[in-house]
Length: 383
Image (cartoon, rainbow, N blue to C red; front, side, top):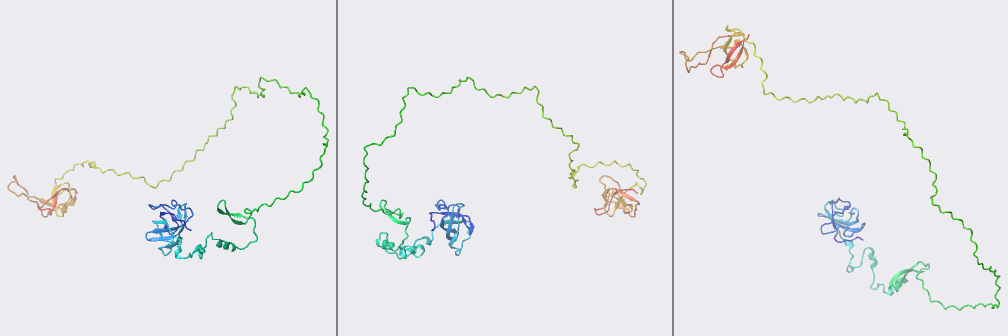
């Protein structure tokens, strides 16, 4: 038979189809323990998990608050449902737990079949039925004193069981039998029997008998008994006792402790120092070269000339062959005088003029009518 409890409904975080671990009570309900379900009790449980449900019988364990699952019906075709971890569990009752009312006919299951066919006369006070039941028992011939029989205790008004020995009935006492004949009394003697001779009583003494001599009590001592002899104290020493021999000092060690090994040479270079910041100052200027001696003869080493190159501009300090230079011929626009506001027309090139050797340009300048014409300037012959 299952155990029932009022308003027991709890949450569970159990997943899968195994034993349920019971959680806290749903609001407005109580836990199995607070509902009075004893440890080890069998209960009819109902599980609700969303649209899934399961009805079954389980055994409650107070330690760990768990509930086993034996399914009776479920939304999974009679199998255990797979719990999601957000289900609720409560105690209910099934149709097997409800007694069928008499209007539905005789009981047909379990021990209730024992009531089938009982008549209206089947009452404990119906003597006919009770007598029939008693006479229907088999007759025994081996009763012993420890066998049990029903006994109605009239003073207590209750039925109880007694052993045959305890409940044995005592009949009325029989009539007391007559006393047997009294034996004859012997003839009375007129003479008392002789008493034995009594010892004589000694003469009363007026003096108490002497007491035995009492040992003398020793004189009370006014001094305590002598103590046992004390051992003599040795003469006081004026010198300190000899010290124990001092352990020898170990010989000086001439062996130095082992020197730690030198670490292996590192194959990693030390970090390279940072590159110094770029200098914002120019390096020291070199000393001026020795003064040259200018040539005064045309087209010789050291002589100067204004010339131009048709092959493009040359930077100052550049060197060229004299055969690639053309000498410049300049003439004035105003041939009468070179007064104010007079300017020189662009220079003309002296056709056929050829220079020898190697020349260095002293400064660069554009000569001609446009930037696309010849480039030239002042050149000095260096070889």
